[in-house]
Length: 317
Image (cartoon, rainbow, N blue to C red; front, side, top):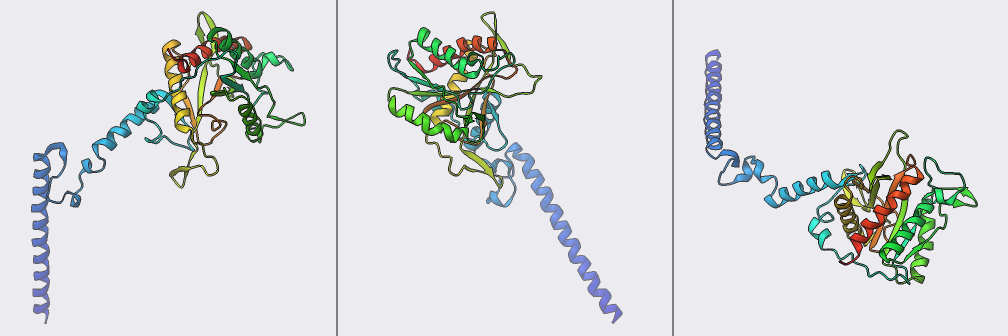
């Protein structure tokens, strides 16, 4: 009985040794095949059976991914709640988008308003309109009209106040019906600007030099109406915007023109998940001009460059 069991054990070990040597031979063959084909991976009759890095992405997908990454690095800051997708971020589409408006000084073509009218600056005097973002809007509109012949409508309604109390929550919801009424009454308007100033750390100074004068830096802002849910980028429910692509083309072209006209003036475009005020007209933009740490003078100086960037972007040559 013991001899029979010993014999069976030897046969099992023999089979294992044979299988082991077959595995070694196949492994050596595979390595030689990989080396002979270089970086292309393993080329076999059915390539899906063996891992081939080149099969993970098509050449077109790899190119799109690379292009998107390059675009992001050069032009954008992306909030963690959202992300860039190839169907929205196509530079060729941005360049071909028709952004042209025909200026009429006797009719408004650009509407400027402020969802947050309370925003002020480092040396603002309390209660003085000229020292707030509304005063900066006055200056921007004046330059657009006087120097570029673009009629403007400046809406100075205070959407961030309720019964005289500062109430930022709900400002965008209170703003929309009012601005829509202005647009309904002024059919000539082609472009809408929601003008803000940014909020930054107290040690941050967003300043550059333009024509020998200190000027606040500008940042163009986009809401993508897309948000990550469970790791998947999805449409933000209830925040539809049929004009996202045109919004993006406008901010891209303004950033590009700003870089050409005044290097260092425009910060990277900020992308966030929500809609904000960008869904009432195709040519809509939210602009952050400087921050609370800038001076009023720096804000006013920046208006000259910003007006030129806007005009250079939307006026036909």
